[in-house]
Length: 438
Image (cartoon, rainbow, N blue to C red; front, side, top):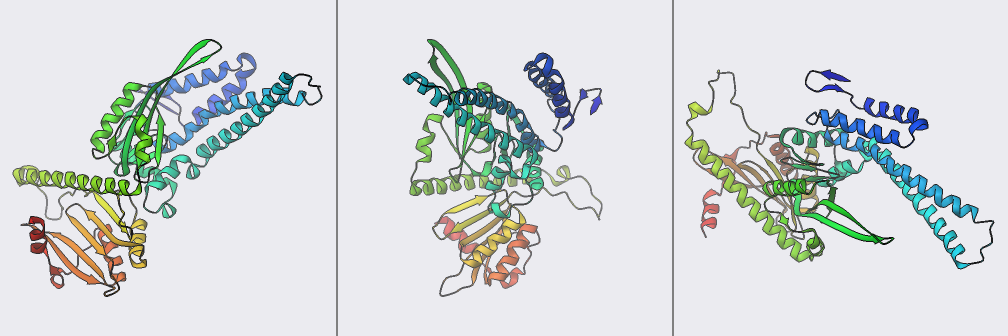
């Protein structure tokens, strides 16, 4: 536990849940279900006093641990199943003279089976997510965002990858955190893979027993490039609106629309979806190119002496890591871009190029890029294009090599050690400039 001047008394995981569990077990005999409400009030009070504190273990692990609170639903399902079971099993030995007696008996049996299934499913998923994070829904959603989910790193690295972005760049909107690379909700979404955002703010009205009852549904729907939908429920419509505004800045090329049109968006044909993907990539590449050009012009306009501090001879200038992007094209012509990937993903991309799975593999890192195009029946060698930023201009070189050499260069590019002897390559800079002017 922590006790400081700023935040005051604070219990960390798992002691906060242990204290609540002991309290509920001891107080249930005296105050019943109100002990659960008091325990929930204590957890809310702890969060209220430390709103900006980074959870122990990170944001992702904290999100999986909070699944334990959903065990309250399991308790409710258990009570409902017990009620239906009592009526159903007591009706076995009774004679049923009227149709209503049979109806009550059948409905109670159905309710018993339904709520028993809900109890088992809810209990299993909540305990699985809280106690086995590697098998949790959140971990599965992160793996699904990587180029090769089956080759994903351990869950600790997956969660750390998202936690670093949220801690450094995250903006919180109720239960949704939006960083520069990831969106953390009930699922995790890579911002580079967002293709559609559909906010839902509806008031559902139904009548029961002559009474009008209404409930407000506030949810954020995100569609990625695989047509997979990630849904997160929020409590405040204003927070939903601000989250959508933030996503417009983070993913300006994505499609934003009302939730009522999400079905129409998902029902697009494969041809329409591929056309949308090409247009998405074109607009994104254009935006990134304009941003790089503005950054280059801004760096030229600022004097070097005012931009960098004085350094000793043995001290290197600080470098800002360039934004990397891995692009894969298969034989159908479909191209997928990934801004979040691991070294193993790069290895598998090289193997896929050699094995015929991919026709083009490209790796971009700021102004530098490596473009690999698989050979054909006439020439099985890989065509390689690589850029080299010189002081006066950006030059592009071309050569042909074996599959093994291409895989080696691809890994070197990913590790930042790619530095071949370009004197043996063909300079195609002028050729590309002429094609661009056309």
